Image (cartoon, rainbow, N blue to C red; front, side, top):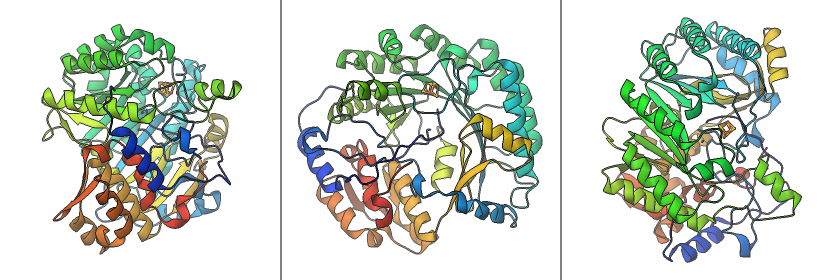
Length: 484
Ligand code: SF4
């Protein structure tokens, strides 16, 4: 489920060169192998020793935004207010995001700021503040009167809300920013929180894309990794959702959770295929700081996490992609397979990656207005206090330059497996081939990228480890950033 980022300092530690990572990956992945959460996670530059470079060590590798969060500062928050006071842009699409930071139980691999102890009254109070935040934005010249192209509910667990809470929240959101022109309303759900009635309510309020955090169909894995639901609840949720006919049903899987084996993974992938979802998103397990798993590693002085190493996880995802392809699915990003690529779009992802505005409300959420990134206060108490004062609860921001926006779009869109050079020439007057000659040549030489006329393409092997290459496209001052 998409959201906030807990980042610990790695100041003063060396970052492994992309070359070293590539060399190591190429060597090790040549042997045969077995097997967001949207989240908002990013590359954390973890110092890797040569003998452990392919072990799963603590830290994030996933690049979800650019520039890195450590460059977002409180002193830039005024730039957001200036933007909000300016006229609306003529053609930039707008998305709205609402963050629900509540869960039934904390998963052992979770690094989000989630609350598992709030009662209905506390949750209602939070939703009231979130709506107050929307109302503030709806009065700003930059956003007033704009209608969202897409809506996204992330967390945490949005489906933790009761039917009444969902109905009230969505009707108040629509009063601020009407959804009648929205191409997609996406909603993240934990299977154990869903009943048929709640799913009916979600259909009625306008949800079009339901995303189920299944992660695995193996009950032992779900238990060992601290998930709140079991496979029985997953099957029931899928079946209800399919009966109700959401436009799109996505299920999330994680390759390489604790205790994962090739046999488990095989069963999970084949079960997922049998369930016939429209879209499947597969993440490779990482162990960020602030997870229960990391704390246990730290207590015993362990460097490598008790999960599969990176070559194994890549091989598992590679195998899964092949099985889905045999079943008629198409790989359409580094993490997703879809049954019908013509029909199954993911507007939230594609618009954000192309520079859409995103009004993000709720504790710790991230947004973006006309080239300015911002993040809200990360704790519930300060967030509510700030809203009570009638102020925007923004804690830090970053006004991007045109060059940074070019890099951002490039590193995000290339995760689709290809980009159009002409798109960048039209928008930024710059051909990525000319902008990144050395890094691209290196990746081409290694067989991960190729140039095919207008397209820069990523090979399957490249796609499976794309997040490791992306910092090589960053501006020099961001490559050795400290991530917080
Ligand atoms: S606790 Fe689990 S369900 Fe809740 S946000 Fe974290 S990973 Fe997702």
